[in-house]
Length: 88
Image (cartoon, rainbow, N blue to C red):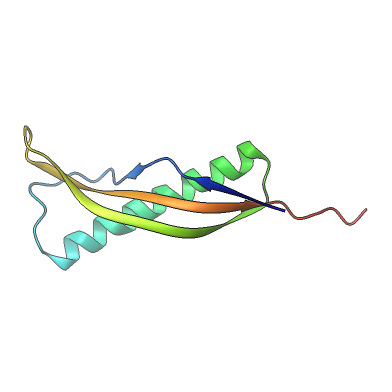
């Protein structure tokens, strides 16, 4: 049985000066965001009593703090949480 959920917004912990159009920097931030998202989904699946999840949609975009000139990637993930029925 599946339950549809929306994950909390995740944020890359890697903050950098204004986000350049540098693919290497984007790739590094994206990898960090995805690593943190997987950790967060695993925590939520465990907390809510599921066995696995399937990401249905994702939105990833750069964000910037004008006051500090820092930038990061911000992700929002919609997922379905599943529980595998017991064989009893």
